[in-house]
Length: 191
Image (cartoon, rainbow, N blue to C red; front, side, top):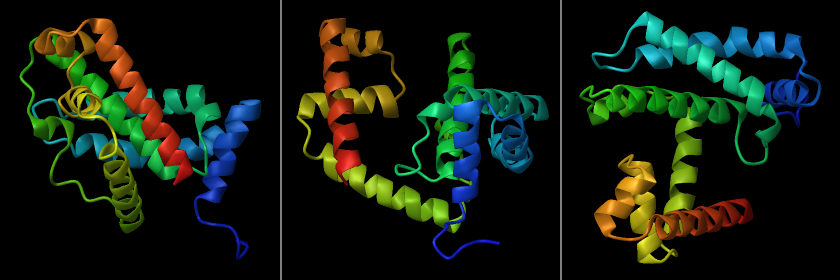
């Protein structure tokens, strides 16, 4: 029975915490049973030449392995369990596609974020709040940090590519990116 002061994600948050503290296999099995089909559907929603049931299964395995390994980093005060899990799924999918790009496979922006995906209302609200908060914080950053943030995280360039393109030393690119991320992180915690 759900108590009045318990939010729907609290049960999943407790399971993630159990995995983090005691490597609870039963909690992991429950998470797997609930989220694996959703992650697979997310992987299959990718509308590109690389979409396949095998790729979606690989995505599920990668995401679930990362949940097992990184459960200690989950913070229920920063994100709902489903938001955290699908952030991992998105990052794993991008990593998969970047690997393909390195072997000279043509990629489009739809490969990274298909337009036809329809997240649930709670995810949209969380995404909107997070996007607004991040945009507000980004507007306070120096222009050179914003530029590097965009090139690395939106355009998907490597640090070395940004350094070559801008003519900046690699260490400067990494330093500016690190400073920007620290400011984002500290300001997100404060909001």
